[in-house]
Amino acid sequence: MDMDAFYASIEQRDHPALQGQPVVVAWQGARSVVCAASYEARRLGVHSAMPARRAERLCPSAIFVPPDFSRYRAVSESVRRILGRYTDLVEPLSLDEAYLDVTENKAGLASATQVAEAIRRDIRAELELTASAGVAPNKFLAKIASDWRKPDGLFVIRPGEAAAFLYPLPVTRLPGVGQVTARKLETLRVRTAGDLLALDRSGLVREFGRNGLRLYELARGIDERKVVPNRPTQSISAEDTFERDRLLEETTSTIRSLAEKVWVASRGEKRVAHTVVLKLKTDGFRVLTRSLTQDAPLASGDELIRIVLALRGRVDLGPHQAYRLVGVGLTNFREPEETVVQAQLLE
Image 1 (cartoon, one colour):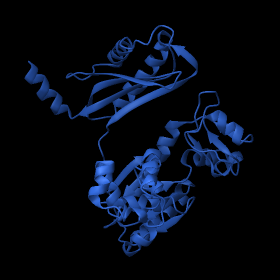
Image 2 (cartoon, rainbow, N blue to C red):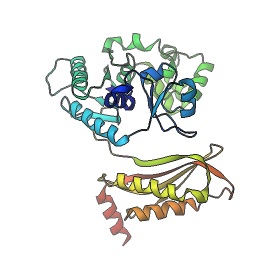
Image 3 (cartoon, rainbow, N blue to C red):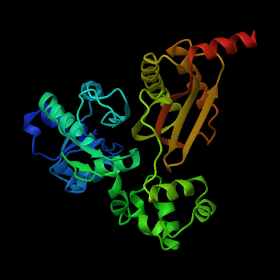
């Protein structure tokens, strides 16, 4: 299930004057990027992660709305409750997208297609939003199918139809095939998923390593991954792109603010983070990271701020180097009992 233009659709729902308008969810400014765009804006070439200034040039009539993530999270929770009526096997990918295993469903419906139709009806009736669904025998195919008839669409790939659906697809539609892999496949005269069938498993592994095996399986519609509900958090982070480039010493207030956000967000986690990460991007778009891993969990937000500022001290590109972005993150989450055992071993 994939919500349609989720952030922009919420804004259009909650502000009727925005309905039918090219809505861009982003802060306006030289460094801002687009968080979401309504389909009216998408038709003019605006899309997520695009610089806001470029969106303004492509769509001069665009209405810019600053994002309200607390509101989007609340609506996402409402969507999750609807999904939970039909199955407990729900694996969220983001606020607006999730895999569902409906091999058995709570409503007793006869097919996955009927479940998808029921969920879409509930979302429309209760939340006044639309969702698109992809129904297929595995996660990979379902993900592609969910995009096939957007917005407000439903597309079904039955087990016997996977080969006919896949073979004409450009290889760039396969997960993990970015520009570099696509160019390399082009040199092998591979442009579609069907073309991949001419390459044997060992040849693909030799050319692409572990990703070669994945390509071999995807071209044949094979994906054995299960739907995993409640997947544990791997990291929590926040970052900010400056309106103007800043020197390192000028990032203190932003680092403090980001660290406070990350600390508050981490309080909702049962598991404990043990690695603190600082991310910086220079005015030349070079990305730097510095990290610290410790056995004891963080005691407070103030300790997190202190560690991040100390990590900043390990960056040495000269006093005149300017930066366009800074980020703070927590990772390496462990169960609390692991932390206790390690602490005892160190005593």
